[in-house]
Image (cartoon, rainbow, N blue to C red):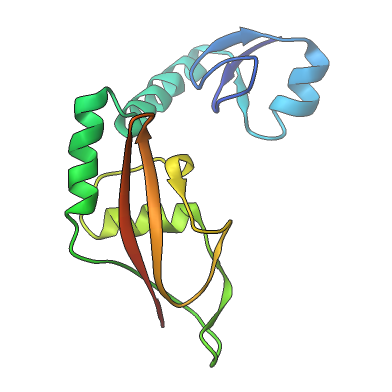
Length: 150
């Protein structure tokens, strides 16, 4: 079965790669999870869109990583408003995707959510939380995220 990957799959390929897999693996694993689409002429056009989106989030080199670090650390305040109980405990939690959206809305660059490291697995209380963004193996940006009640 010939497929085009839409996400990074271990030991198979990166988004936009055209791969040949066994029918069962493609039909029962890759397609239902949205990790791939069936290869066709229309799908090739989607591949270009996938690659453009991936390139926009990708850190190109060490100099680019340092520029992104300065942009992130130069943000005056990164805040996120969430619904809370009376005690300051969140309904749900703040995830890496929420932090990436908060950086973008504060005027920062578009960051891949997988490069964001939270203090714990998820933030579940209001207040200031230290966040680390791994932009490159040698470069990490640190900033404080202010989680406030709605």
